[in-house]
Length: 93
Image (cartoon, rainbow, N blue to C red):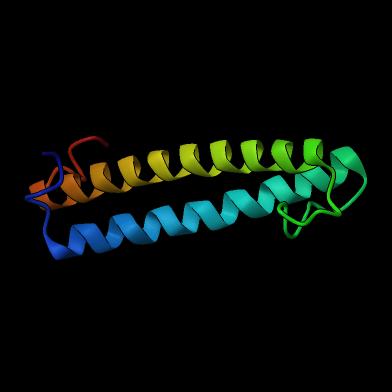
């Protein structure tokens, strides 16, 4: 299973990278939503006062955006950590 042999430092960096990416992308999607629709994104999509179409659209957009951002951030952080540990950071320049 991938990731079982990763040390604590690598896991911590990956977790931090994923959380940071999720936060940034969620803020960016919220900004884009406001610009596109002219209103704030739903705070609580499960609230009955929010239209079902709006709630589903928000959930799909945020879910996909955050998921992709986390995968990319963790992969990038893992690659950078591996290069740093193997001393290849200057070899690519």
